[in-house]
Image 1 (cartoon, rainbow, N blue to C red):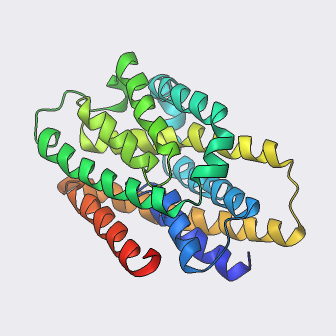
Image 2: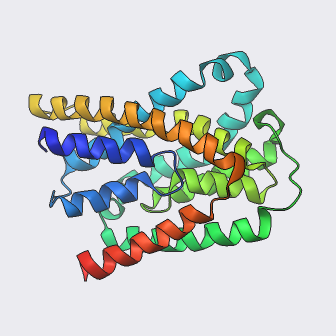
Length: 257
């Protein structure tokens, strides 16, 4: 992977990681558009540059992370199901799911439909959970199972956690912020596992590409996080659902077909 491709990937990762549109799915489609083979390094690159996006959340939510101890109870509980699924299915995910354009497109489209339906059925009802600290033990674990579905590229970790939280009665803004914070242990664990599996056996040029990807994803994730928080104050997730469906359809018709 050259540095230009690394920059493009970092922009896509940063902008899409915390939006409910699937960063992994967008990276898979970006690789297809740029004609970049899904090598082991490219797959590792797509996982590792998520650290830049994690850092963006840490910077923006520093006070909430460290000053509200109750925040971490539901986050840790929600992380456990994904950790178990990710650990035991690592080889299946990396070797057969990542890089699969058809799986990605189906997941994008189906996820878009689900998002629209959830907004229709649950978006306007009276919500019980207004803050992250009020998420119960049971609901935190259930949200974790929703997040575990995101091991399939195209599902979107953000979409899965936000939809799960909303179904369980969480206010839209609280669901989004919970998704942001839950990303910290989830993405850190995914990156750490991949680094252990690859034994850090990267060339100097690959380390350079990783550095570019890290910095770029950090910058653009900052922009995306701020945008989404403002957006959900007065809007639903329906536009994101429509975007996912249209993207999957157009990509299939004009690129894969």
